[in-house]
Length: 139
Ligand code: 5CA
Image 1 (cartoon, rainbow, N blue to C red):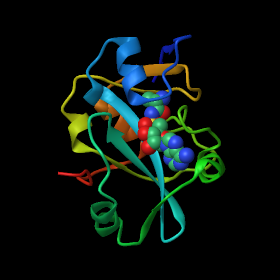
Image 2 (cartoon, helix red, strand yellow):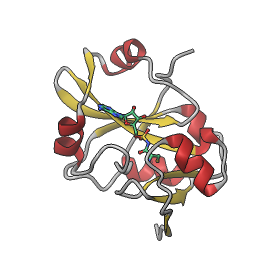
Image 3 (cartoon, helix red, strand yellow):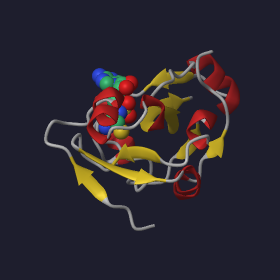
Image 4 (tube, rainbow, N blue to C red):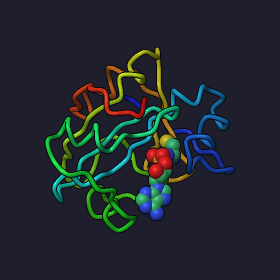
């Protein structure tokens, strides 16, 4: 991969801000959300248009799901909330990817800071994160 990282001074901290900055659909933004499954960090790569159903995520991963707090996200990934990238973490995390992201030609993800993003294909997202494509979003 040769990602081109774009910086937006106005900020890309939230999916809404990122979509407005790059001019894409909200659904094309990759939210890299950290949860704890029986205390172990897991990564839910979720479309900007969707919300995680923690009950479904727990059924998928066979554990009790809680949300990581800001310190937990930093500890698990090495990055802060709002800039957490989908891969390239301190140590590899078990990852699942929202099938909604796979329906786009390209998607956009945080590049490590709350003002940077990069474009990639869903296939690159799945391969680089080692994620399993599985449905865990609220219906
Ligand atoms: N840069 C953007 C788009 S790529 C981004 O990182 N979006 S995000 O959705 O992946 O990261 C922001 C998310 O962090 C929010 O959707 C929210 O779910 C989560 N979040 C925000 N504040 C907290 C908090 N205090 N504790 C836990 N999670 C939080």
